[in-house]
Image 1 (cartoon, helix red, strand yellow):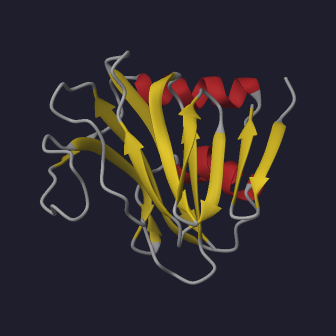
Image 2 (cartoon, rainbow, N blue to C red; image 1 turned 90 degrees about the horizontal axis):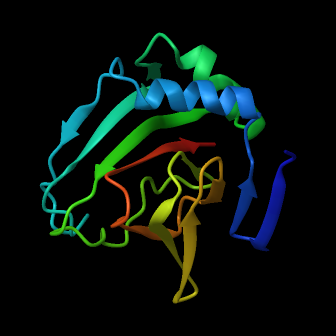
Length: 175
């Protein structure tokens, strides 16, 4: 299936079927396998989130260097498709369904000038990414193989899923 680009605003765009079917399937298999080293992230900043229970994270790239042997194989092709110049961070997030957690607070991953944030969804569910643009909240549905790209200076939050046990995304921050 070909990519479908929705340019809904100059500040963000949605690209459905972003990755080739086989590449996506292999990456999803890796993310849902038992071999991925997920790390628990407790939430210690009340300004950052309403999530009291934390989430799991896996980093391919952070602090100016790759953190996993599969970075070149799994992530560089995606960054090239995003026309990146330099990587800030690339990580997967896994959130488990939870009756106590409804959403995060609005936040920015990074505030570097001219940087981008992109979210690649691996779970179709009722979770939403909400962008706050010009004091309007724009809801983006969580749909497998959808890429959401937006300026990093845009506040965003997640409304967590209630219909599936776990939700996985890859979060790209780059120039």
